[in-house]
Image 1 (cartoon, rainbow, N blue to C red):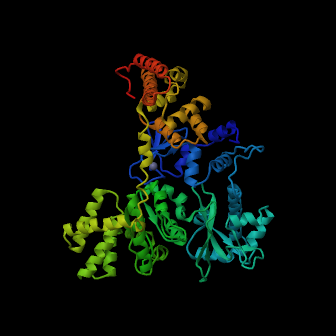
Image 2: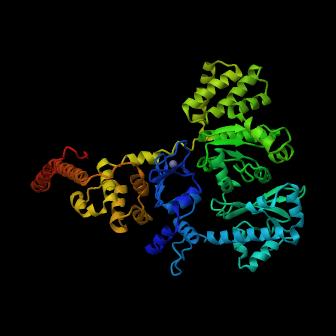
Image 3: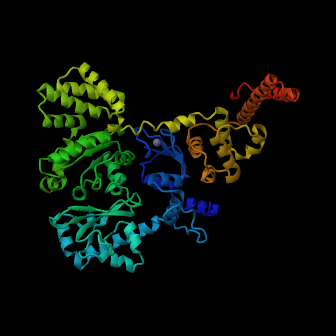
Length: 599
Ligand SMILES: [Zn+2]
């Protein structure tokens, strides 16, 4: 690794891991640990565990690591980028001589892109306050947004013309290439330079979980098209996992216990303006499973508040299907036809919206209503179509009890016998298995990491656990187990313990760049699971069991060699026999103690 270890350690010390991880996962203190809903798989009961040193492990999907790994996984970046980003955050100077390992291929400097986006956000805000922002200010005031909301969400204005932003940012030292990478400007079709992406629009900055602007959305002041224009996807902006307003909604979701999902930025701001602070919106794209996973770390209950017209209701139906596999409890707000949350709020106020929230339809009820809207449920054909469409949603429900309940209620709603509902369901499921493309089953693969961890031999696992709390036992124990460890993850961990240092978070750093799959997951599981540290006597018996295993393997190998020689009649059988005897005696001396593990 090109960075000195002392620098990596300093970056780690500068960070507050519980606060940083807590920005992504709602963490609750439990004993000496923190627990929350895992951001890397969908779950209903928290199995994601963090300690004060920033080591984390999910006992559901088996993922684990340190703060760097968390930032890497969550933001989809590599180790060097995670270190740089945390160093920046903690005010730690990145060593000039070694800027760290670089990726192969085109150089993309994420920090530089983020700086350009920050500068653009400042520019837009200043423009909204300035002379050119008069019309935009009037527009926002006309929509009923006050100063507090505008500044909380960092609203701005992109002036007309083609190069206002480009000029301002070039003066601040950014290159055209950087502005392009940040998605702020676009190439002209004829190849003669670039132009500002957002012009003469109100600008909504889109922040990441730390509040850094990563993209922008611009809305026309009048009736022009397109109504909204969003930044393209960039190295720092991924549409299918970014939700507008998520950071601002965190406290609101915690207080109310649910999230309200709306379709657009203005709907969201109108909700906030009326005191609903638990609101998020996708960004010019349909709601995705990735969005649901992001939300599942904050809440398990969602209320969909889309437009009251047919397009909005169809989108809500689709969105229900995205929420269901994650085990969300979902309801759908019924707004009058032609109303969106923004216009509904300006007419009926906060009280009207509260009432609409109270009367929101549970997912199944809403889906049945949709089926009714589509066809006549009294005709056999209409019923069959409705049944198939409803069962398509049941297919997305993972919990068996919940599925059974859904089927019962579908039978009631359509006045079809329970038996027929279940038969149709099995048929549909078989069809879905034969043609899996149409049905997402992306969570099925998740438990394998946990299953793999379970395969670590008991004696090796407990030896590692003992050494994690008593690194000073290492020389004595190694003299016993020698090179007998078979599991590559345990091997990597013991190597790291020897070279890296005694504290688990130091071992995790030493594991960085280690090729062995699952080593840091094993480490974090051992550190964070509720198990007593083994006694010295037990640790010794583990080491002995490992040694016995190695001797037995060696014996078997010799035996095979001897048999091969007997068949071919060549070689020094006597010498091998002598070695075999010696091994057998050694093994005899290492008799297992009655309290030790078997290997
Ligand atoms: Zn997990």
